[in-house]
Picture 1: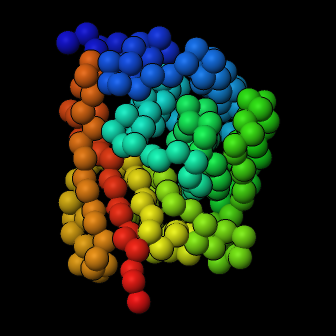
Picture 2 (picture 1 turned 90 degrees about the vertical axis):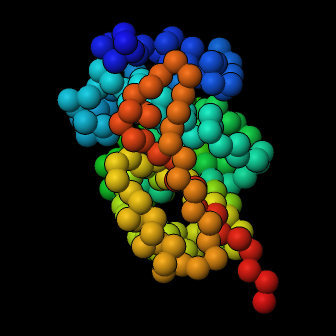
Length: 230
């Protein structure tokens, strides 16, 4: 099929989103396009995404991140922590299309954090904070301890490590959303055996009009941490 032979452009990605029930306003889409341009420009100075895949930015990076709000409804007004945000994926994207959410974008690499802050300033995103540090250490500070209802990540580490590293950041009742691909059932089995009581859901990313995520075994992993009554 033609979708496997060409690279999707911005307008085509927007069409896929619409076909899958995600409506994004003209203003928000213009912000996404501006952010994409900023990311590509800054990417010439520091690696935010692979320089071999800049032509695939819209489908491999942006559409991949947009699969989260397509597949999963996040309640209004929540505090969201983007763990290992890199170039702002998916944190900046969520901040643009969900201005009701309060995003905290964190990365341990100072150069990336500096660039992400510049992009946030350029886009005038008032619902975003950018901080530098390792997630497992950030959560030990009073300001951030048990603050977040939702944590996002993109294949930055094994599932069991992500659960451990985000322990102090999460509210007692919270969810961790991870965009991850490949053979991950062993990771899920190990996590379930070590952490009883949590609910792990592996959802294959299936989209109308775009089959590559399904073909390449890309998943949205949801890890729910229910409130424990004492």
